[in-house]
Length: 331
Image (cartoon, rainbow, N blue to C red):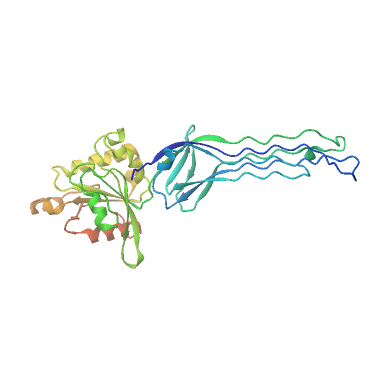
């Protein structure tokens, strides 16, 4: 599946219907008064969060969206039919920006959440609305209000409780595959993960949380190097960060500093989140290396050694994340 997480589209609400000009023509009424009805209201453009959608792919192929115009007024003071609203379904986590001002118009962080981003024009008044004691036969009516037109940017930010970050091939995809039902592509070379993966971790007694694994970061990711900059937005909303440091790397403390630097340069708020620092692939190193880790500190905390291959400390990690999410274990 191709993963598309940004798109720019043009939208317009419906314009209001014009007011009608007409006069009563009945045998029983010698001088029929004005009876032109008002125009109908134009339809709104509404965005709604849909949990069944995963990407913005469709919006790369269709770029223009229009709500229905209101109908003109009719005789006998009948108001024209209002235009139908246009409802645009978007993946949960989509943020809608005005492309010109950058203003956030909608943040679809809840399933079923509906927000009007362009209001339909009001219908124009028919000539019956303009009759006064001194003007018994008005021959004027109003046009409907124009539509609202704007260019919007759609930006998908995956909604997950936990974000897993690390260098390419650090074991992020393997971890998410063993702690959840997610089945990411896994291979022993960099940039195997080309799209964010989302998994649900289920614990006992109905306790669960979601985890996002994003493509590996490299130094300079915040400037556009590698793949990471395309996907850092997907961990902006996460509540906890899990750092994955490869046990086989020569200087894991340096690796940690580089990762923190990239997150900080992208957004300083990133490093304010609770962290768990994991040393992965512990089954591939000697016991002497394990002893060295006990003396290390990462962001003021001791590292959490794990092996997805052998299951070492995996259950403990799952529960540790749960405790942090529930505020039971402050780090």
